[in-house]
Image (tube, rainbow, N blue to C red):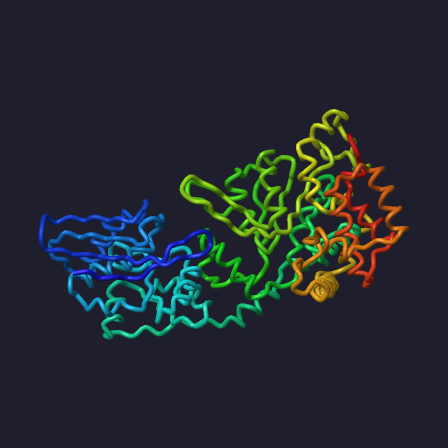
Amino acid sequence: MIAKAAAAALLGIDAFRVDLEVDLARQGMPAFVMVGLAEGAVREAKERVFAALKNSGFRLPPSRITVNLAPADVRKEGSAYDLPLALGLLAASGAFPAERLEGFFFAGELSLTGELKPVEGVLPLAIRARDEGARGLVLPVANAAEAAVVKGLPVFGAESLGLTVAFLLGEAEIEPATLDIDTLWDKRRDFLLDYADVKGQEHAKRAIEIAAAGGHNLLFIGPPGSGKTMLAQRIPTVLPPLRFEEALEVTKIYSVAGQLPRDQALIVTRPFRSPHHTISDAGLVGGGTYPRPGEVSLSHRGVLFLDELPEFKKHALEVLRQPLEDGMVTISRAAVALTYPADIMLVAAMNPCQCGYLTDDRHPCTCTPQSVQRYRAKLSGPLLDRIDLQVEVPAVPYKDLKETRGSVDSATMRARIAKARSVQAERYGDSGPHINSELSGSALEKHCRLSRPEHDFLEQAVKKLGLSARAYTRVLRIARTIADLDGAETLAVNHLAEAINYRSMDRQGPA
């Protein structure tokens, strides 16, 4: 007898339907064969499922069992196929009518006792089940809240294989999982950090406001203890809140990567990721035999903070160039090529030299000009070109340290940033770019049009500083954001001057 159970497999951050077909034949020698590009944990499912069936009180007759995972030409991995396999075996053996499986999607890992354990990638699976018109999704109770984010799909969280079978037979009831998204949404207003904690550094705060308003990348350059990390950690508190569609995108990435906290069904605040400088290329941008999301994708719609930037491996930094330009990461392997979203705001920090005190008048610098040059050479010109604002962060003077609070708090900055973002949304509409950092080509010429005085000023700056074409574009984008914060429709010389002032590494020239 043949039974069929519907499941889903992941391809990047999306899921596609997998039909798990089970044929149980009484003729021939007892055997178990699984086909359909099953990998690792999927092949091992046989041992877990047989033990779970036995310990749940079910018995399978001696049979030749053939299991097919269709489509057979796409790789499947993970332990989520345990539950549909167990149900397919029971239905094929006649333990309950195979028709009971129709219309449902199933996912879940089985323990040897028959309990259901949570699995990864449930949110994309639930979206696929809804799009397929499923009458319900049955999965471990620990995953139910995550799947319940998807509206229009009944989600049934089961604790065990036995309960699932009883539910399908109509002998037990499982209440569909519900989720109050409004309550989750309210939590995004709760920030433990605030710019009111940061004393001094008004120049850096202004740069952060510009970067957040236009979605620009940002580099802090300053001696140890000047507050670079403290400034960066508070950037998510001033960014515009996630829209629901953006929150779904971010949650899908964390779900696929297995990093979604079990008590958090939906990520409602912008991510802030700060990997250590010893991270590998694959850890930063993603990779592996079967590519997984890296830190740059886990920072999607949020902030990727790279502290001690020159200490990162040079090749790891160079592979960042494509994601910074395109907003996505494409990882190609012999068997598959996957694309993960990576629309990030890059924030980095570095010392001005190896010892860190080149720009600190309170500590002598012990570096030679040659060592300073070698230290800066760790960062390539193309990478620096992609970092819009390069800001010097000096040591905080005592007169600022003795103040009880900083001069501006996150709420004030957030309001100004939101106003500038609304100006950009109204200006661009659905025309292509959404924020100033995405301006290019004809859109850049149209919205950053300069008159003769501004052209003359920028021409002198390009010649004197030796700005590349990419840096020239960055200056125009930054100036457009500064004008938006000032409420100006056209760019003026003061906007361009301030924008150029934020190209610190360009202005320094060779060490």
